[in-house]
Length: 410
Ligand SMILES: *Cc1c(COP(=O)(O)O)cnc(C)c1O
Figure 1 (spheres, rainbow, N blue to C red):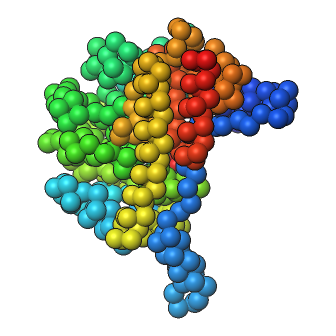
Figure 2 (cartoon, helix red, strand yellow):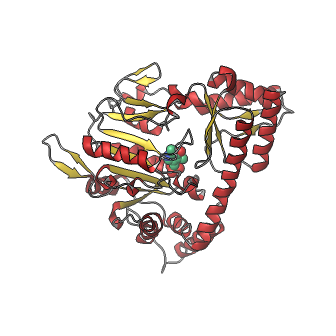
Figure 3 (cartoon, rainbow, N blue to C red):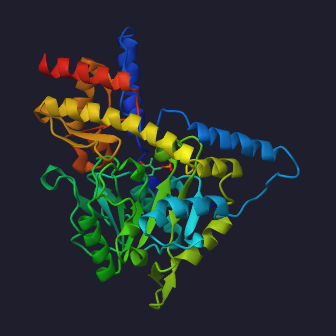
């Protein structure tokens, strides 16, 4: 009989969003007349940009004719998209890359989860707490996490983020081989300065650490000085793999496209001590397990880089960031400590009156009919915090803040 990868049994089912859905459904049933405003979802709501739609329609038409039909494309993505990425996301920032260091994928979740395929099981993994759960869970599946105890994994090295350090992680105290960083951060909405990121790159260079850098929200950065890519830091091409996504940038959560940068100079060592470039290894992995993102989707992603596409995407991000401003200022006006929301579509709020994350969730639902996400759902250090997303409608954000004000100050 086939033997199970028992690491999967160690993973508790993720109840966070189903628990939220259950509580909301129960409340709705008891109070059918109330209108609930949802500011919890990590999904965008605005439609694809017109330039993207137009490009995708055109690509569909190409697929409809034998002369222009495309079958399997290159596993690592079409050159037209890799060129647009190279020029618009890297060369303009003074970052030279080779085209074959860019791998198009069907979204950043896949590759942040899959990248562990090319690493040995006995790597020590470092993560922040709170965290985007994919980084940990994919390592649990690979057998790198040990056992689960008190909300933490015994073999994972945690870098706690909390009010004391303004949700900025310190360098790990124990030796790690791989570190996951996400900036701008989901769930806290915090960013990393150039100086702080340089400290991480220097640490990685000195200690032979591989950094997995998730830049899914870089398009939300408003402040000039905040780095959009880890490769803006000297030496990062030696130590970092970077993940990008069109999901939050161009509304591709349902369309699916992203890319991963694996510089040729990033290496991992064999048990004999030989240093091997990861670029070729990742290519080999992709060519075996992935057959490329659809041509239609890649044409859509390419269009996000045209002048019209850029302007349209920028306007959508400005819409979400206005929501973020409304919420950030409303909470600040109520004397509630907030993080994020300035360079990210997330507001991370300290729950008032010392409530736990779930106590605040329940009270907010009952008293204001507003739904958000309990911070503790992203890790134990998130206890006492709460995440609001800026991906909703502006009118809903305004009304939600009015209701919260009436509740907390009424
Ligand atoms: C949304 C998100 C992504 C992107 O996921 P896709 O698979 O590209 O939709 C990646 N990382 C983080 C932290 C995210 O929140």
